[in-house]
Each structure stands twice: as structure tokens, then as C-alpha cells.
Length: 289
Image (cartoon, rainbow, N blue to C red; front, side, top):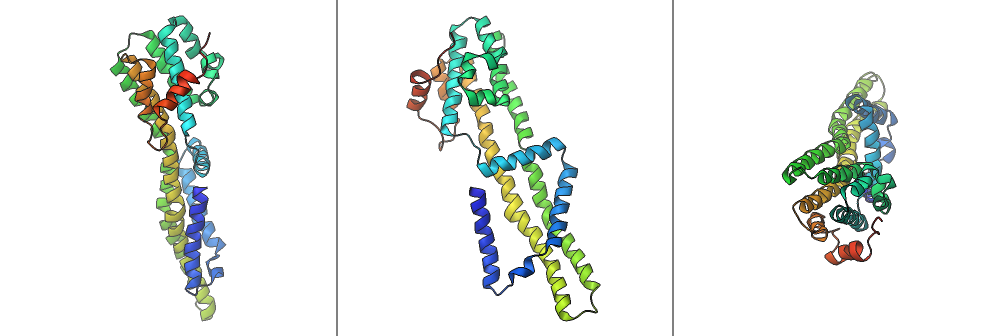
């Protein structure tokens, strides 16, 4: 909704100011200039990125339009899931806990948290490190270093659509100049025509420069930033898991370890201590039998 509203405001101000200054809106409608600019941008986008990144960019744009970021309820569910698995590791034999992390789809613990079960990357992250904790012969600083390395790798892969869109935005002004130059070449071939025809052709050429700059700074640049913001908020969940499990490894009680994770949540979305306690102790998912 924010993206659509922002584009409406931007277009209204740009086109409204142009019309208010005496400009004619129909002059800006130059479909062949737009074809050159946007078509070339899409072509260079395909050249520069593997198909996996192309598909992920489409997914990232959709997430940005939907503002698909974790809510406070999502954070509470994640903390509650971690609390359940930590209690299980603390009170049950190794063989029973391994059943949950080796086959989370059949686990009574993870089944109580459908969003986490559906998120394969997050599910694998939790299960992998809980498995290392169960083994019991790995130092906490070693696990923390490994977590940091994996989070860095996940971040790099997750941000590829942002960089791809930013590259498109950076190239659009130059492609606008290309479209303008082609328009001027076309106009030079019509020097024998009247001033009205020649003026129209030159105006069409200049629209290419305008369109390239506009799409760069008013559409694709902000869209790349929005994709980054949305994905950074989703990546924050991995840090929550990391801080919680590291605190648990270092001897903190499950409820205390949750506080380490809770503190890494943005103040805008962070649930209170009472909310976490109500979710995990009072209203949390039932423990596996």
C-alpha cells in the first residue's frame, strides 16, 4: 500500500506541476521511447543475473508491495517455539529431542507453529543448531561463529534482488540518454520537414531523458530500498534465534534466554516481557508427550 501511495503522490506532483506550468500531457506519451528504455533495462537485468535471482527479484518485489514483514505475533510465535524446544532439550533425553529436530514435520512441537514449519530456511536454521547443542561437545563461541557465518551467507543471498534492482536503477539514466540520442538521430533525418514536425520529434527525444531519470530515482531506486527494508526485517529473526540459543548454551534458563532474543527485536515491534511470558508459559504451545 505504501509503494502504491508513494507512486501516486510522485506522479501527481510531477505531472500536475508539468500541466500547471502549461505543458501538454499527450507530448509525454512516447511509447517507443519507453520501449527502448524499459526493454533495454530488462534485457540488461537478464544478462547480469542468473534466472534464480530473476525469480527471487520478482518475489522480492511482491513482498515489498505487500510489506511482508514479521509482526509482533510472528515474533511471539518464534520465541514461543524456541522456548518449547529449549524446555525439551533441558528436560528430555537426547534421543527424544533428536526426534523433533531430525523430523520437524512430524514433531508435536513444530507442528504447533505452522508459520515456522512452513519457513524452510528458518526451520533448518533452528534444527541444525539445536542438533549441535544436543551433541554437547561444541563450545558456545564456536557455534556463535558458525551462526554469524551462516547469517552472513543468508543475508548475501537474500539481498541479491536488492542489488539487481539497484543496478537497473543506476543504468536507467544512461539508457534514457540512449533513447534521447536515437530520437535526435530520427529528428535529424527530418530536417526538411516543418518546424512543427521537427519540434515534435525533438520533444519526443527529450522525453527519453526524462523517463530514464524518472524511472531511476522515482521508481526502481525506491523499490530496491523497499525490498532491502522488508528483507532486513525478515532476516532479523535469525539473529533472534542466534541470541536466544547462545544464551541457553551459556547456561541461561529458557525463559531468561528468551529475553536475549527479545531484546534484538526492533522497539517498534518488540513484545513486552509479560506478553512473552503469557505466550510461552501461560498460553504457549503444549509440550510434546
